[in-house]
Amino acid sequence: MGSRLLSVPLGLTNEIPVSEAQTRNNKIKTFIGCIIAATFFWLMNVLNKDNYAIKINYPLRIEYDQQAFVPMQPLPKRVSVNVSGDGWSLLQKSWLNFNAMPVTYKVLNPNQSSYINSTTLTDQITSLFPNLRVNYVVADTFELSFERKLRKIIPIRVDSLSINMREGYVISSVINVSPSLISVDGPMSIIQSYPDTIRISVPTSKIQNNYDETLPIPFPMSPLVEISHKDVYVSFEVAQFLGDQKEE
Image (cartoon, rainbow, N blue to C red; front, side, top):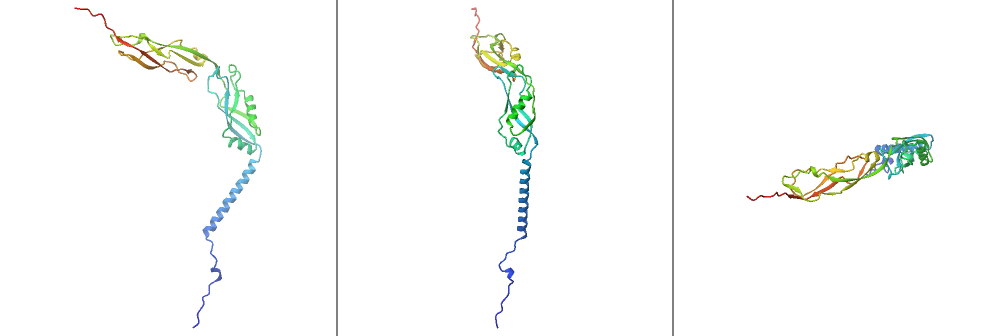
């Protein structure tokens, strides 16, 4: 008997069919690529257009003679600037300007300056935005209030009459106070209200041993006032008092 040959369809010999999942993934990738490309071209078109307006938060530094004057209220630290221009310039100043140098407003006569001159401030800001148009400026506050700075030296004394000693004991040395003088710096109206001498009270009662303690200075604190010391060191020696003994 002769051998029989099996015939195989030609289409199934060398070709591997592409799966439906792979086809679907390719379509999704193509779609996402089209979206990204369209978004990119749209963004480029938008950024190239002019006459956009945006409000930018910008750091502000008030410059004045800190050796001679004290601000009586917090100074503004930021300023809102409404600017208009093309999209690229606005993007650079708003989103990409992380390390922006603050605009400096100089107060030449603090005694006579009660507000920030918005025209002067706008001119200074305009120089920082050469490619943009500054429409208006809004600060946290435009009010300014300064006073002349005054320094006062105040002696520190211990109220020796109020020291409570145990019966039969006395202070046998000089009362030492360190520091014996403090300095306070601040607005003239506040500094002038402080006493010429500050007296320290020793809170310990029935003292019978040598005394050495650090005590707080009873001083009215103010955020506008700088004080050289907040505590003083007080020390003195104590001895037992022996009265005259009579022989029987």
